[in-house]
Image 1 (cartoon, rainbow, N blue to C red):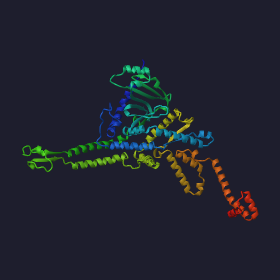
Image 2 (cartoon, rainbow, N blue to C red; image 1 turned 60 degrees about the horizontal axis):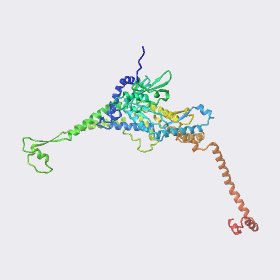
Image 3 (spheres, rainbow, N blue to C red; image 1 turned 90 degrees about the vertical axis):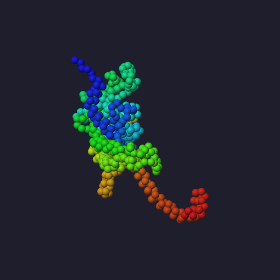
Image 4 (cartoon, rainbow, N blue to C red; image 1 turned 180 degrees about the vertical axis):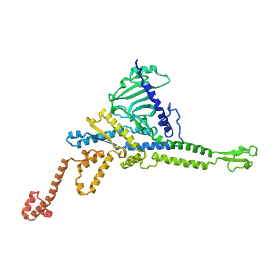
Length: 531
């Protein structure tokens, strides 16, 4: 009996059932913060989204995402460094100067690619998704040096993981226009099967881990038709997808969000904010009642201007207004307490980060420390799961585009995470701290320092090229010898001049006159004035 092949669409629907509960929690978290981050099902630009009665959730998500962005991808400051196999350095004779210069140049190229690629916008959106929904998917398209990112929401993909959290299978569902299908035969079949009420078709992309081959198998499918030109195999480190999670629990395929941890406060704040708004609107409403059996005309009361005299009895007219000041005061206090708690969780009360183009390394370091302490180590987890794979994929794309030089396969990026998440800045601070401590021990300890190596490492830690800033040992020896020669010349020259002047003083006038004539007929009086 032959087994029927299961399409990618059918497999997606199978995993979709398991994801529904996670997606429901994500949408509730988005509803109380930024509803557009994870919109409801069948959402389009004409669908009206829920409007929260408070803005504390949106402010908190945006603020926390900004701080994470500042620490994970500091502007104009590399958060990584390159290392190379020590065996290769030994093959080069142990001279690390040329190697360090090459690594510094490659680091500058990579950092420039990050700054000019425009990927920060996508990464910021990814961080907002992680904070709100706990899950996000990054895709690194293959291109000729023009590296861009694409972010997928939780409702656009499904995953399968092993008990340790390692990714085993990934399926993405997205919509494309039939005319965008490159395979002509498949495009013709899809157009013939296309529903006239839809302007798009569903494209499924599947990546599954082959344990035996140790590779990723990637396939694409439209309406049950496999796109052969998009299918293939990838090495373990070449998968262009990063399925990220905010926090992970054992035996769970999807992550849990930070908003989910404070959802109780957000629910209470939303309910109290709605009650305050409705109660304030009711309290602000004033009604005028007129006795229907009285002589006072309601129209006269309604049309009367201030200080106008009308006919009637004041006892027949009564003003009605709800007196809810005490109740509103209690609601206001509860709202303020909830806002303070949420401000603490989302770091809204922090004034570390200045609104400036260049933020100092100390500010970034302090911000990283605060994130680590406030988020319970989640900052370190996010940095480890995102930064290092991100850098490796960037290196791969630059290598494929021919931007990185030959032999760059031997380099290995190192990302310093957690409290030391400043890359070279942290290394520079450690170096300067060691030098200061050595200087404090006295002149004997200071004399043992290798100042040439120290200056080279300071240049590398600052993202500069040591060979452009520092001179070699040979050049330094030549300058030292030249300085000694000049010093000797400065010491000998005054004695020679003094001796010459004394000799001239003792010279007879006839000999002085003859010498003056030989030097250009200088008058003896002028020569005597010189002495």
